[in-house]
Amino acid sequence: MSSILDTIQQRRSIRKYKNQEVPIEKIKTVLHAANWAPSNGNHQPWCFVVAKGKPREEICAVFSDWAQGYIPNAPYIPAEKKKGMLEYAKDFGGAPVHIIVTYEIDEDAITTEESLRAASAAIQNLCLAAYEEGLGTVWIAGEVAAKEETKKILQLPKNQGIAGIIPIGYPDMNPPAPEREDPDLSKKVTWLGF
Ligand SMILES: Cc1cc2nc3c(=O)[nH]c(=O)nc-3n(C[C@H](O)[C@H](O)[C@H](O)COP(=O)(O)O)c2cc1C
Image (cartoon, rainbow, N blue to C red):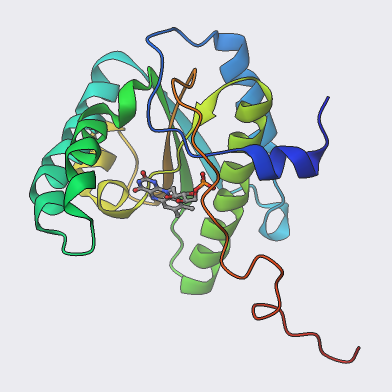
């Protein structure tokens, strides 16, 4: 088994997947890993929706509709990258399953923020466990996660928000690691009292 540090460094966002079913046991393994995340007051404010078939296609359509309008007009995306990004946006690169991680929306804004932090920790656990199981993932948030239409497809109650939509499947790419800013951490870390 690889060390946790290797797994953290080697996990990549995967944007092209094989046309291959993911065994349900593997999905359960990554869900259990997510469920072991730390949380505010051990409140465990996350839930999971596992979507394939029609609901998966409907989520893809929401993302794709948004991306077809957004990507061609985004000035910061290099022109030569737009075609590939639009292809990926059709169905998140063909991932056969999506795991949606939700968090509780509370009347109190700080509690809601805490819940989103905890659900984010659950997502990272999920992505790392998936990597160890030979599966790829990519964390999708932004517009598609914020849209009421997506919440409706997933039949979420009003008090649940989406922390991430995680397409999951067998990777059909081996992307290089994107560079980290300040890799020696000479600028991002402030040491106080040392
Ligand atoms: C909160 C959050 C939102 C993200 N949203 C998207 C997204 O909408 N589409 C996408 O392709 N990747 C998305 N990503 C993945 C990042 O692009 C990716 O993590 C980053 O480029 C670093 O690459 P790596 O994951 O391979 O290390 C998101 C990641 C996070 C944490």
